[in-house]
Every structure is written in C-alpha cells, then in structure tokens.
Length: 421
Ligand code: EPU
Image 1 (tube, helix red, strand yellow):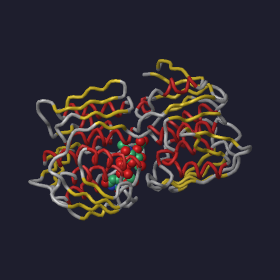
Image 2 (cartoon, helix red, strand yellow; image 1 turned 135 degrees about the horizontal axis):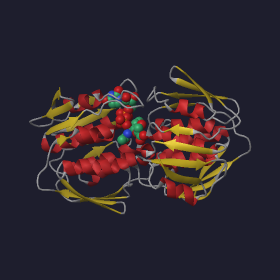
Image 3 (cartoon, helix red, strand yellow; image 1 turned 45 degrees about the horizontal axis):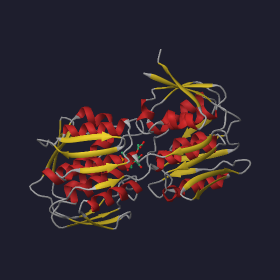
Image 4 (cartoon, helix red, strand yellow; image 1 turned 30 degrees about the horizontal axis):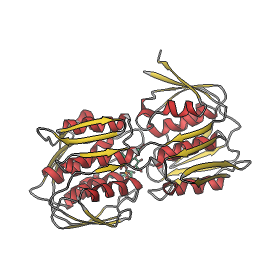
C-alpha cells in the first residue's frame, strides 16, 4: 500500500477542475436497476466507491462499460436480487440498491451495511419507508430480505432522530416510482444529490413533484425507460479544495462547479475573513488579511455539510482564538481530532462538540487516515504544516477524490507517494 507524502508550508496557485459527484453517482447508478433499457451516464468519477458500485451492478446482472467517465449500463442475461455482504460491507452507499431492486423485481436481499468510524449508521428509516409501500421485511443472517406482491403508494414521514436521511430518501423514491398510486414523502432529504437523482428518475419517465424540497409527491408509473444523463459536480470535492485554498492562503480557481450548492460554506468562510465568489461560473477565493475563528454546526442541506466538518476543523486549527465545531448529523464524527493533535493542533472534544484553540502552526508527522473526509482534513493539515507529513491508509482518500495527486501537483503541491515499509 502507498503512503502519501506531503511537504507543507507553501502556497498553491492555479486551477482545479471538479469531478462529477460521488454521492450523486452512487444512487443514480443504483437507479439503472429500475429499467432493462440501456442507460448512459456521463461525468461519473473514477473512484474506489463508484468502481464498487459498478461491481455490485454487475453482480446484479447488469453489463457495464466505464470509459473516460462515461458509464454505459444495459441488462445482462439474468438479473439477480442479492447484494452480497462483500460489496455492501466495503461501502455503505451500496445499500441504496434496496429500493430499485424492490421496485423492479419486487424482491431484494441486501446485506446490512454495519457501522463505520463516523458512527453507528442505522437503516431504520430505509426499512420504515419501504415497509410503508407494502414490502415485507425480514432480517436474517445479516441481510435485509424485502419482498412484496406489489408496492402501493402511501404517505411516509421520513424524519429520524438526526433529521432527514439522504440514502433513505433515495431508496424510498426509487421504490415508489414503480409503485401503484401516489406516494408522498415528508421530511425528505433536500441535498443536491437527491435533486440530481430526482432529475435522473424524471428523465427516465418517473412522475415526481417537489424536487429539491422536503415534501415529494411521486405518482407511480408502469415502466421506466433508458436515458443519457450527466451527473452534477461534486460539491464536497469543491468545498474541500476551497478550504484547502483558504487554509494555505492559496490562489486557486475552482472550475466545473456550482457555488449555489455551497452557500453555507461561503457564509462561514466570509465570517472567517475569506471571500469566496463566483466569477463567470468559476469559484474564486480571496484572502482578506487576518482570519478570525468561526464556529460551525453541521445540519442536513442547506445547512453546513457534515462531509466538510473535518476539513473546516483543519482550517480552524491555526486561526488564533477559539472555534466550536459541532456535528448534528454524525455526532461522533471526530476521529480526526487525535491525528490533528499529533500534528500540534489543540482540539478537545466535549460531548458532541470539538473546541478548537488555534495554534501558531502545525508540524508534519506520520498520521493515519481513518475515513474519507477525515483523510481530506489531514491532507489540508499536511499542506499547511511545517515539514513533512506521511499519510497512511490513503485508500480512504481514493474512495472520494478523483485524480487527487495530479490535481494537487498541477497547482504546485509538493506531494508524492512511497511504498509502505
Ligand atoms: N440515520 C438514521 N436512520 C436511518 C438512516 C440514517 O438514524 O435509517 C441517521 C444517520 O445515522 C445520521 C443521519 O441519519 O445520523 C443522516 O444520515 P444519512 O442517512 O443522511 O446518511 P447516508 O445517506 O447514509 C449520505 C452520504 C454521506 C453523508 C451523509 C450525510 C452517500 C453515499 N453518503 O450518507 O457521505 O455524510 O449522507 O450528508 O451519499 C461521504 O461522502 O464521506 C459520506 C459519508
């Protein structure tokens, strides 16, 4: 396995092109199970997670070709309804094949994904949603087995203890588009990735009103058709590069993205003294003198994204003063604190909040990536730090950041890979 080596302390300059969204691609790829017609999806990022989803589609009977970011999917000889433990356990996003399998085949056997380092991550809302549509659910041997003679529309309140759920909304929508009658979903997730999935389903012939809102009205149709579609840009990748630019005082232009999806980050950064603005479709970052500490609480969209919490914390680590960072989506998503502290940060956890006392500078150190976004935070910290940082277990980064090394080297980052000793 490779170790990512970084020499920090210099500023970066140039353009970063943002890839297609990982978290749009995963449910949209799953939605191809809803039809036997051929489908073409463009701007799919070539990531460990999208490749896992492709393997899952193949195991479910699809023929898939993935060349230069374009994915072509068509029905193979025999469709399967079993999503294996091996594929679902490595990536939780795989669980969103439950809805389309149930919608199309009226049966699904999908491995329970289990917890991960960012929290327990239950699937009760997914199950509540498909049960409301008439599915019978059994949990056996670590698998959710869902069967239905037919699915029938219903009114579903999909709010949970932590608010809306992105993939539960995706699963319920994908089951409901082929159900009989009308389904209303209240407290649906409003994330741009769900809106993207909605647009994809509508292009396939689904009838969905209220896209992008917490209240969806889905009128079931008999059949969905093939389509050519392009995935939206990855707002979390864009946000990560914006925070990287802010943290290293760099002059980066972020291309191929949509600033509308990043309002909460733009707002927090403005408070900190960083101006982030749109210039002819590109995002520019302007640094205005001394930065101020800013507190952040994550919420479902349009709130500040949990997927940028760790990177924001890395940025705050060297801003003089105190900032408080709370995560209302994943209250335990703080595994990065220990590694940031190994680099000289002064962060302590108190309940569901992290108290960041800004230090003068961070120092390079050997550190361990633990999950995708925590790894992105360590990358930012490494590029800010004095000296050399070694990031171990970088396969986490490869799950979500396409062409990371090339994109960073192009703007002048001193990064290289070495073999793990
Ligand atoms: N939750 C429940 N019950 C459920 C489902 C979720 O209580 O049945 C809770 C979760 O434990 C969490 C909250 O609801 O506290 C929100 O979780 P959500 O279901 O929205 O998360 P997800 O759909 O499993 C997606 C992204 C995550 C991102 C979250 C929140 C994908 C593939 N994953 O996960 O992305 O953090 O939404 O925005 O879309 C990442 O990309 O690094 C990543 C972890």
